[in-house]
Image 1 (cartoon, one colour):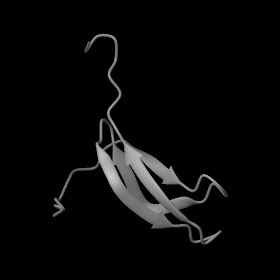
Image 2 (cartoon, one colour; image 1 turned 30 degrees about the vertical axis):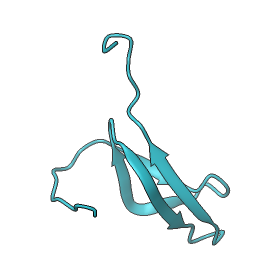
Image 3 (spheres, helix red, strand yellow; image 1 turned 90 degrees about the horizontal axis):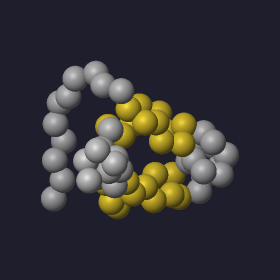
Image 4 (cartoon, one colour; image 1 turned 60 degrees about the horizontal axis):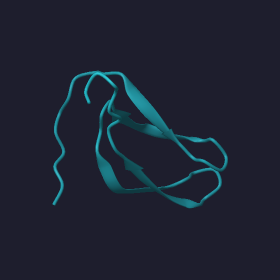
Length: 62
């Protein structure tokens, strides 16, 4: 199951195709996101890609 929630404007990391560098329109990852299983098809090169993201721990958090 997944959940979609309304959010405020925030700084995000844009997703782009690793092959042709085309950005995925209107999609971004929030800082410290945990994502697994997100897929997209690039509009330019038509290839399918899987996105996964884990938060990065800084030395202060360890």
